[in-house]
Image (tube, rainbow, N blue to C red; front, side):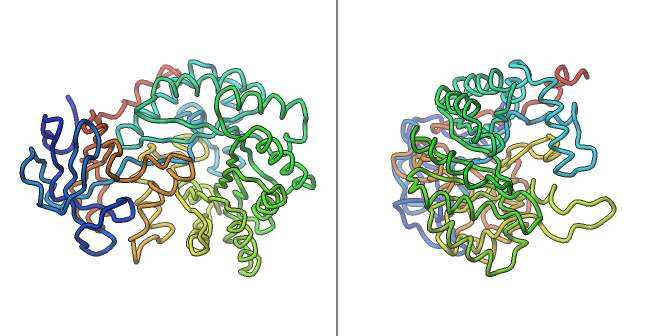
Length: 438
């Protein structure tokens, strides 16, 4: 039985979503009636699967309509930092103590023992099905790219990209320790793999003596091959972890013209204000985008047995945004040793980000962090926004105000793709039992 949340939409190829409430931050080319809190009212005319027009609320009366009664309408979401290759392995390999080191060890053991083509594709497909049902249309995933995973995980990603094309668009980043860029044989194979599969160069940075040299090699390879860069950075409470500054300096030194994205940057919040300010100024100068992963970082950071955590684990997103740095949030890991929970539900990510990062008071600009900003960073300005001419890929909510939206999980939302409501039935976890010997 199809689960859509609302009653059925009109069957007509041309109809109107009447009396909708839109976050102004995601609506382009239209100024609707302002109802406060960064929200506005509009009628959305849908024709042949696209947004034909945005009109004043209640003004379109000559078409079949679906009356939203001021319920919110969002564009489909952009989840710009995930780990589809790791997703859902928790039943098979748990984190023994919930720490970062415990997660590294558990994932490495599971990867070496179990990550066949069949295993990775099954778990990736399961995760993407959930994201699709929740209303996400674009995902960037990091792919563990250390031997012996080259022959398995990248082809699995390519298979999923082909399978889901037109429903959930997929991008992939090579995740490897940054020091391996110092190995000519390894980096040659890595770049070849990324180019073969249309991926993005990436990695995880550490405060090693050769960090500047390794970063210079990374930026050289990216420039030579026209590749963007996406890095895991300073995912630690140690204030001496300052690789974010080294990345900004390397980008400036290289005159790099591609897009650099960095995720986590947790240690920045543990540094002295002057130190953090100097680093953020360089990040702004380098044009680097920053994505915070609030749920995973709060789960892992400052975890000690028998001790209550003292900080939230997230980076200085407000201070970055005030400098004009592109900032976003994303899911990160789901049901694996790095984060035991999650379902690639962007609404959950948004709700938790508002709480953890205090993106409210006001909330006017907050919707950008899972829509327009990540879409632009991922070079997809055609998604993540409500705009005349765009595909009618929308998420409809009964919630009218922010307090209604953020107080419930919005499980009764309706997801529209190309103007038609999709089946929102989520995949059953039992489908994965055979992978775990259950």
